[in-house]
Length: 230
Ligand SMILES: *Cc1c(COP(=O)(O)O)cnc(C)c1O
Image 1 (spheres, protein in one colour):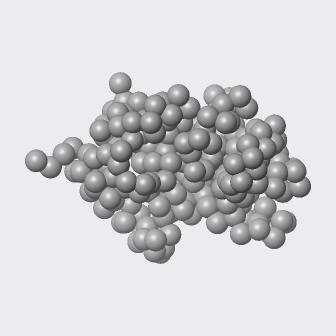
Image 2 (cartoon, rainbow, N blue to C red):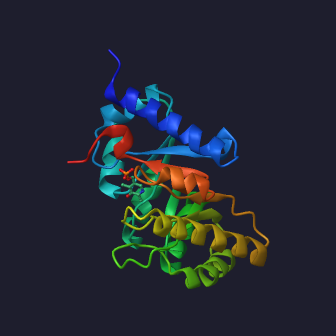
């Protein structure tokens, strides 16, 4: 029997491919990260059977439980949630990237532990592009000083780009504005620091088509694949 996850993934991939084509980009320019918070390991296994290679989770405890139960093939586990300094060690046991770097103190802690583990940790800087107080991320104007300090003080971190969560609204123009802002910040940081910063992680179940059109290289999709969270 074909699973709901299989069908949902097929639909998401078709819409994603349409959006990629319409924006004049190539399929390989945009990666799909399946976001698995609240969904069980069996659902992750099914998604992986259907070709998913990249998983995002935003809760430390949940990620570590799922990782200890994981018997599937080797895949990429991205940490995408707010992270406290005292959880860094635990996260780096399980995650291969941290996409939600939002402060220098967190960067220092990540770099210290990564160095101990002799790993180079890919990270994305999370920017609060909507100004909503409930959102994590550095303010747009703080992104440059944060990047500068990370480059100076955190040798084990490799900043590969930026991440944002779009505003919680159906207003297309407002959502697009936030994504365009992230792209603009990336372009100006790239120029100022002579870095490539190739990744723009933006777009979730409700807004990934707009995000792709605004230059997203990585969409993070949960409920459109796994069903409504309860
Ligand atoms: C939950 C979550 C997602 C996925 O949200 P959906 O609307 O279910 O697609 C993406 N990014 C982050 C940071 C999340 O916490």
